[in-house]
Image (cartoon, rainbow, N blue to C red; front, side):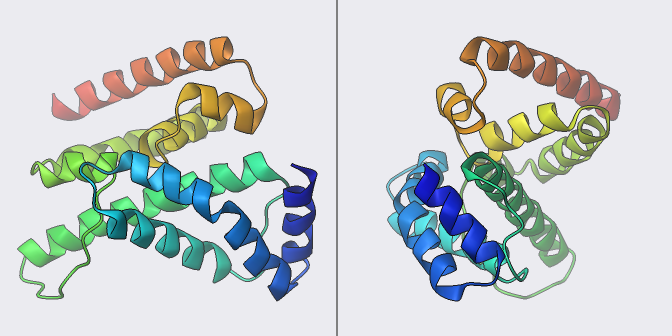
Length: 185
């Protein structure tokens, strides 16, 4: 754990080798998280999601993360952005855009693949509102829905009890259901 924090610190200071070593160290775990979100056995999809996430993290200059839990919270947010960008691009394609898109298939993408792009975008809007009220709850939703972490995994990452996270998860779901219900009405 301290090795990862040390690598994050060096990467944040601009050490390219530390950044590359950090990626190789966390690669299997990130790939496992991405694969957990995929339906079916298409390994290339999880690999693509991990690589696209890493590229977004690495291309923003030095990593602005403090430790392992912060790293995974940011990775979950980046995965969310990838999903939302994909859904919006597909919507643009339906309106006449003809740019071919790579296939990504996370839990959120499964919802979108069922022709429910509007649901994914409504969820994103509701998640923005939740983030304004309670950033920790919004982060929990991102880690569950977009990064595919189980509550036990989130507990280990952010060092909070699983029981507390279950309570927070219920609160977040209730808020999102209420917001999504208002959006449909």
